Length: 404
Image: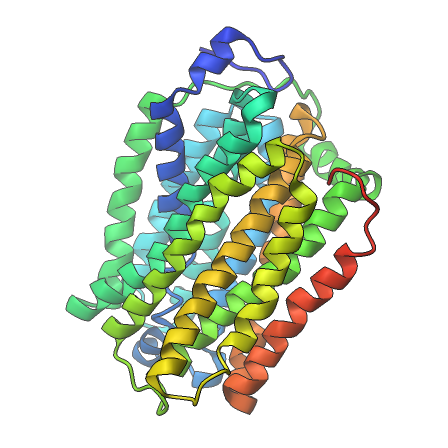
């Protein structure tokens, strides 16, 4: 079964996206995306074990996200050029090797190189999402993207508690080995389930990459949506980089197992994906975007409404995590639905640009968050976190009332 990038929706292509295939693609997105976040709650123990200085701990998360951003810019666009199933399976093979290398590392340099490679090869997830969008009819594309993205968001949010639990009963090395085993199983399932998709684009690789600059200049929807999400995801990464340090510190003194339970709160935010997709299909993207940005904006101040270290403060921090994750997920799905409407033959490049921009925001958020927490504690870190969605909202309010 072959589906081309620019072919119109047909009964055959619609049937290709069955409920089972949608579930498999959502599961694949979750398992692959989780690779980007296993190290986040374990950054402290990993740094201590491999001899990485405390002030450089943020590199563990930042390099993974930088690798992911590079892959989005220079690998994901290949989805508009090469047969997609083979490309996805190749990237899964590479991430498997990178995970094994990370698990075997005992010094900073090999681990940091492996972290970069894990990020670079995990971009397979951003080949699967536009693949699903191409298989879906126009009328329900937002719903399909939302359903697949719900798997991605669940993977991101479950990765942190899963890593903490596994490290608590074994070691951080085992987290990477188990993920590598999951990638092998996933590769086998996808090889048997995914249809072929051969894009119609007939240009060279360097021309393909060069065309991305033209897309940035010519597509205001892409520019705006990428900017909104970069600020949103910077706040998201800052929050989830700093809160494990806050909870483990003298105010709360929570164990790794307790931090894992706290991270489970973020899973509730994944319900935003299918909701946002349906809102986008009904042309309600603008109010949904405002809702998403405002949720992130209020999340950080919520954590300061009770005395630091108290039970009430922990409850409020948990609520803040749910609200923040809900807001980031909402704007993410609305943004993807918007850019996918710009052209089927462009979706690989559009998605690469969109995701690269906001993941670079995430890398910056992690780095700034670790620095701010070290310099001024949670007050400074949360103040920076609040300023990020506030900037996104101010920029959004300059947008003309069009469907973006």
